[in-house]
Image (cartoon, rainbow, N blue to C red; front, side, top):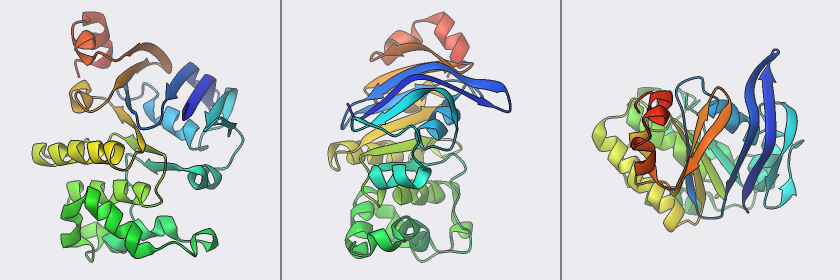
Length: 238
């Protein structure tokens, strides 16, 4: 097992945001967690990254209990994260934003050019705007940079929080293809948080449905979710 969340409870200022969450991801597997805005998707990812303190439960990665690890330690172990708001530094170029993930003494021996070439294989369109300031990029271009930054350290698991939000249909198609490359050619697992079921159909192996901080369904049959009127109403018709 690559990642396991066991009996996770979490709260923000006394308000419960996750309730008894159990989920797991295998190596080289694509999984989605789907739910309406505020259902607990981002809190789940923040829990995995050590950005949300737990009230109860454990997070295990490669069989190691990382519940009390700091965020930078989890990244070092092989977890990459592309947050919903992307968090790019607008004055830095796209390339500088990507290479930020490699800064630090522990990465002194890394071949930066080789790593950059690797992410360009996933997102070949980025080569045209690597030297452009991130603040001057389109939303789709910024999303490529955010995912590339999460990927450049060669993680075993990549978390993508609402990666398709606000993107043009053609960019969504390109991103779906890139996710396939990440899994099938780089061998990394991908965990996607999405409010729209249609965005992850045909991309992931399994889907968790979350509502009010609870996992209420798990399936490897997205079509089955579409046929469940109650679930579709909870998701919001996504």
